Image (tube, rainbow, N blue to C red; front, top):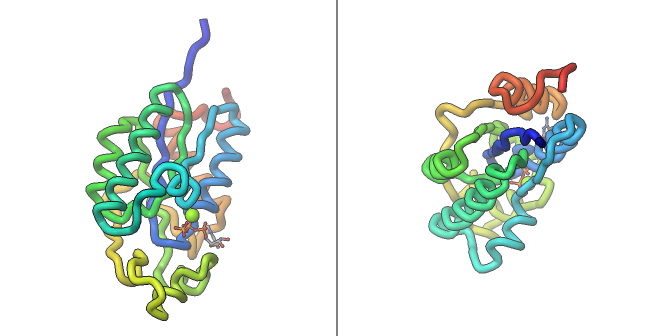
Length: 183
Ligand SMILES: Nc1ncnc2c1ncn2[C@@H]1O[C@H](COP(=O)(O)OP(=O)(O)OP(=O)(O)O)[C@@H](O)[C@H]1O
Ligand SMILES: [Mg+2]
């Protein structure tokens, strides 16, 4: 009989340019190395495929987060390690995801707004500050900081590797991934 590992969802939340995608991809690599089935549901690509009908009002953001949580639930119950990278700016969006998914690890990808503005890999902050877009989280739209996340990483102070190791340690402590050095 094949013994299936329990799936889980790592939900990376944070401001635009805080480092969600960067950490998601590095964590994906680390979990694959441990032999887990991994799926990444990350920001832009998921939005394009799952929610081309939606914009960035609070209501649309919520609908999108619900869709992502639903897909995550389906994968998690089939033993997949799912990594979600989604701004998911409101606490109740994340609580809804937590309640649906069950094995839920909320990671606050923390980075000061000034540093996010300085990084601005997509040029979105520049556009928001110039008034070319009017719904960027952190500039015009609210970001509600997590109150009690399982993990907090500070990407303005830690390396990507340090942040990933913090998440891995929590996943080990929770029994979702084998302890380092075992399988
Ligand atoms: N310690 C760090 N952890 C993560 N990213 C870092 C770190 N230091 C610098 N960076 C840089 O910060 C940028 C973060 O961009 P990234 O696309 O990962 O953010 P994001 O949170 O996915 O943004 P978005 O919400 O727009 O998708 C990258 O250019 C990355 O190289
Ligand atoms: Mg991203």
